[in-house]
Length: 81
Image (cartoon, rainbow, N blue to C red; front, top):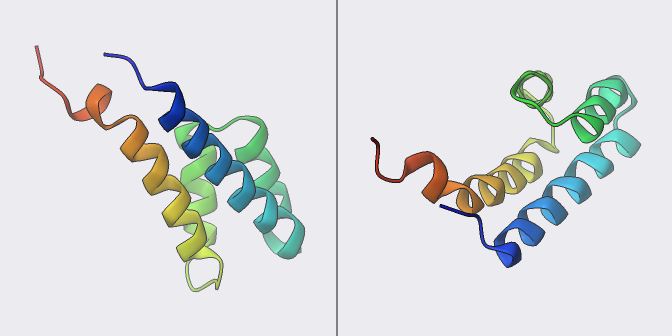
């Protein structure tokens, strides 16, 4: 199964905008956000999510990650072998 290019573009764009805004607007997590932009791995993304507890920008990050999840839903949630 392959992620459609249009879904990938939407997800990547949403993620980059959200995390880029977080890096610029919240100096307390700028290093974490930059790491999540440069190397978007489960570890860096989870670290940023954890740091977002109680922050005004957390819903924006969750929405961006929802777009990532939607784009990859078939690959992750599709038929299991």
